[in-house]
Length: 247
Ligand code: NAD
Image (cartoon, rainbow, N blue to C red; front, side):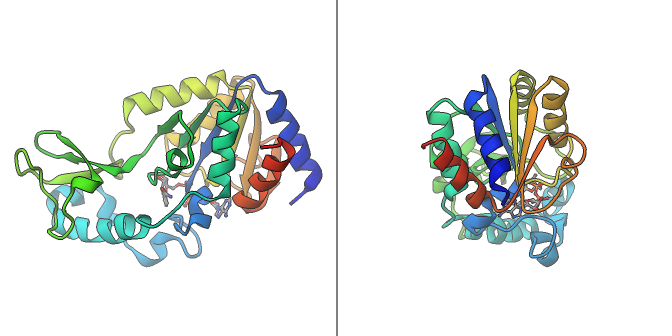
């Protein structure tokens, strides 16, 4: 980790009028949740077809068996790490206004961040594919798959965005609005391969924001829009930023 660059970034965040954080799977890796792509990524072990919306509609049981294993068994014990916690403190202290996340793990909210826009939904909620009733996961019975609706017996779907499904309109429009309003935009742990999420940092850049990026390795953003690249694990970089901002 380049200490001088981290100091420069912390100073920019301290002086920012409207800083926004934008996070991807990388921020949760140190909470024990693997990313999708790359070495040790989920797609090394699983065929991503179980998250295709058409596959889910045709084979809900097969899809649910994988969904339960990947998202529910694995996320059940995951806790926010230092990076989520420092971002939450930055929100609390007014250094960061909001968090836009591609993650579905809800760890930002668990850490205490209040204004979180979940572009790809949340695993904490299930929605009925027939009558649209919504349930918190605590009310779902995962012993009998696929879980069904108490109202109409329709099949429940996790409230996450499947492949070939649109992004929820509210989260999308708010995220672009936040990006365009920001003067400092902090990208954390994302490869920027998922559309339209990957256009949000570009919208921030085009509106004049300074782009700070945290990642263990370069992404598609690094040599295109990033102004300050902080190479390192999210917990290490945010641990240091937290110290510099006296959080
Ligand atoms: P990705 O899997 O494509 O990439 C992960 C990125 O994180 C990479 O750039 C990698 O270099 C970086 N990274 C890995 N470990 C890191 C660390 N310790 N600190 C900092 N950076 C680190 O993820 P993505 O670009 O976010 O997009 C894929 C999709 O995956 C998203 O739509 C998201 O919904 C979904 N996803 C979510 C979760 C979750 O909720 N935790 C987990 C896996 C995938």
